[in-house]
Length: 573
Image 1 (cartoon, rainbow, N blue to C red):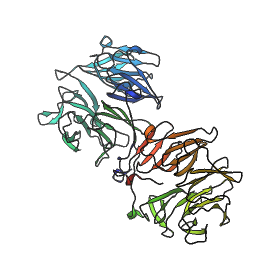
Image 2: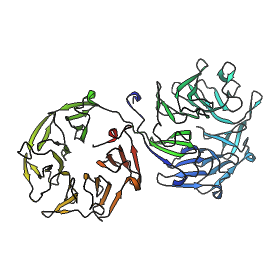
Image 3: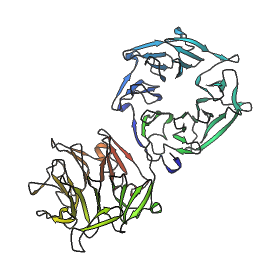
Image 4: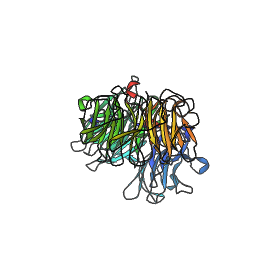
């Protein structure tokens, strides 16, 4: 993946705080156990376990010895170890906690870090040294290096040359044999975190005062160290400097500094520009779970979940007939068809190829055979055979309105609506009008799994009708009686989803129960819903009028902003 073609400005994000059940607002560590649960250590409330739906919190009443939890690790037996600042280590086996302290050989009860080792041991970083913890006891400890006592060991890492380094408060970055990393006699006074990249460089996040984001980089092959500029942060000084650095499986570096920066081996990219509370809370750490989601722990702002969906923009220079996109559809060969105000195009292997006449595309459907159909101006429907469309006239009058809706019925026929009021089906390349429909401004057309046709009008009340037993009837959907604008219809999981100018409606086709989602009650980024679809995971995706893209997972709505202006966030397909 080439990050120069991508942007992290539009990640899907959700913030969790104590009001959602999180144990505390100051997150110190995040860990996903072998069962898939996410554990969050906080400095002000104990530990939370998250199952993607709810938080379970563990505190003093559950046997945790201290509510300031700094680190999490999992031992060889599957027990979760929680390092507390003042209460030692608490081992959780699913039933209760077993506490280990200085009485069991720990150098200190103030635990700053835990690291699981390949041999099954746990390295314990404390305020007075390092210990190796195996099956409930310390088998080795180091409390001084070079005759100097260790003070607050925040991290430990072994570089490509085999040298083991400690990030300490008093002695900077120091090796177990007494070497130091720095420039001349200047040592790094307060290193927080160490990370080794795929090329063997050791990266050092450290505390300092300044607006520029800096990180230390040590090359073990030539023993050279340098400060690397990442970019500028907020106008005010960032008192905590760069707090955390992590190398992922791709070799990218994730750095926190009043936000999050990502390095792909060549350049630094901002990850968190649009995330909540980034400018008001210190960014403590980042964590990537097994599904590839990014979790960000804030010091004072709780926890942020990020689905790092990246977006690339395409314009006329990339082959688009017009930058105003009206419809999207995927054919049976996996090509994405793009209907614009200036004609049709399709995308194949990342390339956009314009095809057919440069006419408005006002409707599109891909039938069960993968055949692409589109509607245009003057009552014309096009059946696409490769790059050559076959035109079918819905209305002979050249002054007819545009085709506003297309859908496939259970018999494989294509139904079409035209703005001037014509509604019917296409069979053997001929259009047959349906009698009984007398309304103009048809907008959306859909046949549900029960064979019932749904038709929406635009600018009239009621705006939603269904066709059954040869008759059109107003749809009896609660709260839609006064809505004059129904923009889009979509069926998924036996539910009719209705996009309107006043929010999203969900009609259960079995029980006929209705849910109404609005910006005011459910946090939608906009009430105008212009486009609907569903992905393979069952998420409902919405294009909005001025609010960008929304994703609904059945519980919460997440938004993607596509730019700073409302025009950039009007999504019709």
